[in-house]
Image 1 (cartoon, rainbow, N blue to C red):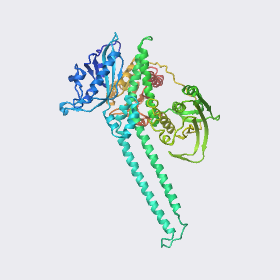
Image 2: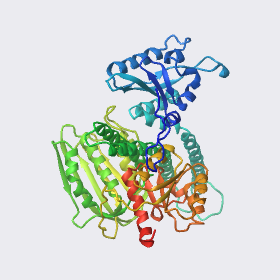
Image 3: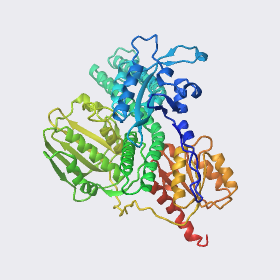
Image 4: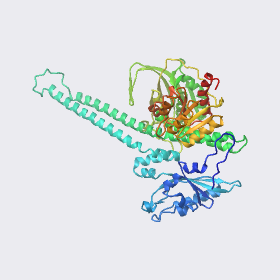
Length: 637
């Protein structure tokens, strides 16, 4: 297999990238095979994972390089992989294999022998002009540690089975952040120590109660003024209240730990996933726009783009239940949100489900993100639909409720005040008490495998809590389910919100300094900006950006920089550059969550921020939005 040489493409555009270097530097584990199963290309990540060297495997048959472990008579790796590759050659379509045990031979320098490994392979054909399979791309994910975690115990087994229904990439990314569990264990130990101290206090109170009982019963010779004797019932009631209170605290702490751990995992994978999705969705759109309207590849690229956007929605759901999703709040009427969605909700539910909507005529104003509220309504409606397979009734109601005193429930104490209440009830199968205890936990589902992600109600919970509200759940088996969502009411009235179109604005060319440590994202942004006529100076890190800036003084019109980078981060780079160019426009781009940005001094309301993943037109519109005011101030430029 060969890669195209770099060639001039005319004009001032930079030369084509070195595709061999890009392939070999890809973070995934890739092999390229010929039709007779000889290895012709391999990524660096694959070499590292299999403990091989490029010079030792190129040009050799894959099964000569990677034979079965002779010490394992039950080994099936070669047989299964060969069968999959033959299916690819026969049918010219991708073949996804189940997780395989395929041991890897260690180099003699590492002691020789075979090392137990588990892989998740995908084999994809590269079809020639006449329809024949010329090459096969063999991609694998090393899931050895994940399988071992599964074997470690029942709870790990349960989580593995739940996660198995998710995408292969999600499994690998979530596992790589398993070290977050160590932090969760440390926090749990701290919580247990706090609980031990609390139980010590209970023991002291019990001793004090016993002393008071003895004194008031006349068992003490001290000359004290007797008080009303404390009966055994009084003592037990007092101690019982204390124990019940501390038990609630223990449950709250454990619940908080569980949700925080899941939130940390979700927030950790968000950055890497958003970088990947930016490249996938962005380049799919770029190539699609360059093809002729009738080109058959446009449809395939559109499918890639839709798949990337679907993956972005899944990442957004993870961030929603972890309460780390970036939100755009404004004063709005919940009634209007529901009214705008009623047609969509009717399409979501079955024809044999009757939808009833009753809205408070006085208006239900809240400070909220309209998109996240829509997500809440959709998830609850889908959940209700699935609970009524034979049809039924779904009711959505809004009202206003004044709490004159704090309201205590199992999750904490709710402050007094005015609240908007969203009620969603169904006449479905209902939920038992044990299920109710876990219903908002991520990846918990009672649906059959493949029928639910376990993120729907977890997403609802995360969005509601992020908005300062809470959820009351009432349900019994066979009697339907009612969700009552409380959200703080807003005193102000809604502001008209102008919708944003997908039209790309075009202005005068500008000189832009682009700083992004992810090479693929940097290449995409540089390509999009250059295509729009801008002069782009790109740098992989803050130090390189400073060197470029020194040669251009204040000729830069705009700085586009990632927020989180190795070494010098984006805000630190901006601070140094603004020392010499105080009027420099800045656009931050990031795939991290809002909490991670705030830790680095990036507050959304104070800066221009473009969240990953983004489409090319979104980048261009954001750039034009920042450049237009500067042009109006300096018409001679």
